[in-house]
Image (cartoon, rainbow, N blue to C red; front, side, top):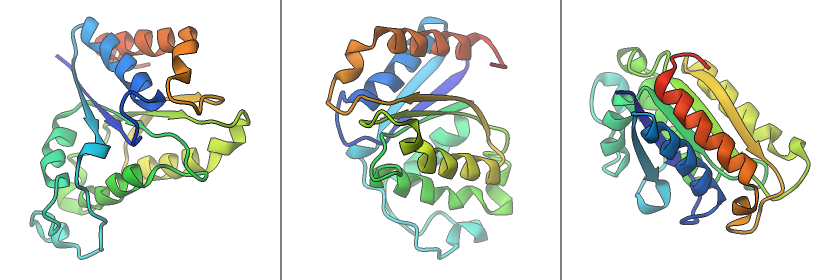
Length: 188
């Protein structure tokens, strides 16, 4: 059974990002995968201060909820990173989460993340796709650096108001079908 982890970086419960990630997980579970969704808004994740304690084989020096997430990240075969665009980048919640991936940058932990398949889910208010480009570039570079494989990008412009995605059934259906494919196929 494939393990799929959805990370929601939006501060809105049941907002557009949450709904999109949930649809992917729902489809995956329907097809037999194990799905889990983490709402970063409910966690205490501190900033990385570059102490490199993790590089010495120690637990992260920050005593927060991220230390509980590392095992979930490692156990997952596929990770969904979902964040709306905030000022042409991810939310502060998602950025703090991604910054703490320095744990996987050290040689001793790199193998725990290397080759992991990831998806990016990015809804945003503006209609111009270029609005999301800086955010997408940041994730692409980060995934490439960590040797993770970006298999799909769900980019949804024009949905700023909470619940606006519910009026775009074709997008919801696409996410659901994508989840089913993730559960049964090793390649997309």
